Length: 106
Image (tube, rainbow, N blue to C red):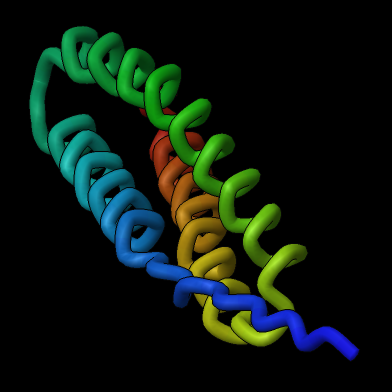
């Protein structure tokens, strides 16, 4: 009888948290600038470019997390928390959008 040892390295999800917090911080900064500045066309253009760049990065990170969620069943709780942190930017985006729409700034 042969014994096989599987050595799995612990999953490190720090990068996903840093990406989520970084995108949230930058998005919030653009939101505040959009609300406070008189000429918002520049902020709007840079914000759109940021969204175009952040969307694929967050999607790649989500796929990465989902992959590890599937292949590392013993760490699913930890990875699930990282997925929730990453996806928490979506409600913030909708909140900012609704505030701008309510204030008729878009």
